[in-house]
Image 1 (tube, helix red, strand yellow):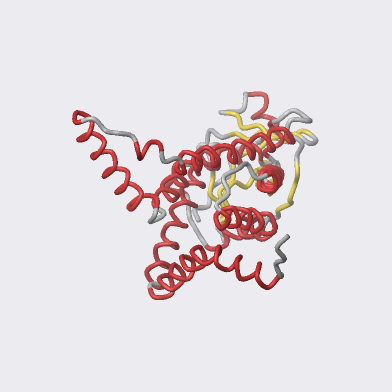
Image 2 (tube, one colour; image 1 turned 30 degrees about the horizontal axis):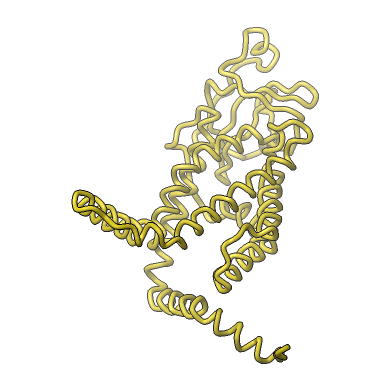
Length: 301
């Protein structure tokens, strides 16, 4: 039996890792050389993605997109989640890089586990589990993680197969196959490699995610103006947008038929967590009489 030292295995590991690390070094070098342009593009892209998210979120309250304002503090909850989940994210990346270095094409159980933890924590942190039956979150999180891993496996397996490349192409097919290859190549160069595909996908999905978060949210700032309870929907700092609310113990209904601007001067707020929150098109006459005396004078902010 041939004996191999750990040092020799380390050198062998470096050889297998060399193509990946070289690509990473090249990418980092290019990023440093173009840091100003990349930072500008990332900043613009991040603002567009956040704008798409907020338009979806506020659409649940019938608040138009013109009321959406974006600031750096809007990213703090997202950055906090990323930091909290960084251990799972990094291990997920490690398993991907390891399989690439070893040229392994298989369903990685560790990656399924880390993916499951990622999905579970994201859904839990954003209270999405409120929409699922009691014991559904575990199988749903695992199923989604396994589906992603299975899809990744099938794509890699298809790419590794040489049968399609070695297939004889008939004369009548050659023009179509050549066109497909050229189209796929340019699609990869301009959409995948540049990251534009990820950006476009994020912008397309963020309104849906925003609406989902709005439906799941049960934490609201509540204030009273002229003895009428209001739920704060948008906080601008010095002023805010609020909608009339009907609070019944741990339940709250929000009237989304109209919204009001208020200044924060002399307005007291309290943070409340409700068991359920509903958005209604308009309060009934009886509910309106209980929730308000007269419509308060609005203060434009």
